[in-house]
Amino acid sequence: MGVLNVTPDSFYDGGLFLDEQRAVAHGLDMARHGADVVDVGGESSRPGAEPVSEREELARVVPVVAALAGHVRVSIDTVKRAVAEAAVDAGATLVNDISASLWPVAAESGVGWVAMHMQGAPRTMQHDPRYGDVVAEVHGFLRDRARRALEAGVDEVWVDPGIGFGKTSEHNLALLLHLPELVTDGLPVLVGTSRKTFLGRLAAGPGGEPGPATDRLAGSIATATWAMLAGASMVRVHDVSSAVEAATLVGTTRLGVPGPRPAVRSGAES
Image (cartoon, rainbow, N blue to C red):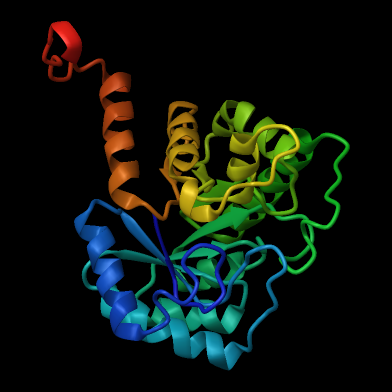
């Protein structure tokens, strides 16, 4: 799943694709590099983000969804019912829902739905997130929301543990470590770690300031690869070509198909 933020304030690519033509071009480029889904969002969900009006979000996303829908599968990243409905009418076939509340839209429209876990709301979610048992609480929440969606008639239900959404670095690592347990529930799992702050914090070491989002590619691909090996069915990424390469290697490993043997060099080049 390639990330396409049509926003001025997203934490990594905010402002880069606010122009409709640039957004469509980038979505098509991600599809050419192997994205199975392009996830279009018109409201930032970064920590501290303020909500935008329904009218503004519709104006940002609907033309982009409509332009991309004939070329690649499109998901709409929103918490607003009207935006989800308009995006589906424009050609989106998956609702990526950080509020885990829009399954009725998916049921009524006959599209897929992603239930993500988030503690609080983007504006305040990272102020002081606390859990008794983060793994049990997140997994229990997702099982409950998935059950409701399936009972409502949604045929395609995904679950996402919501890495970075109301969670400390320790919470994020615990959820990644226990990802196989969520996978064994039988629903397809989506994981998004791409460019997130906890990766910069971990790379900086104890007490260090997290590096900028532009320096977090290695951590993004490492954690996406871990998620795939743990059984995740899809990873949400900004860097599609790198993630596709990692996914290809993971798939080769799972299938036991030998890849090309590396050239052996001697001397100083070995």
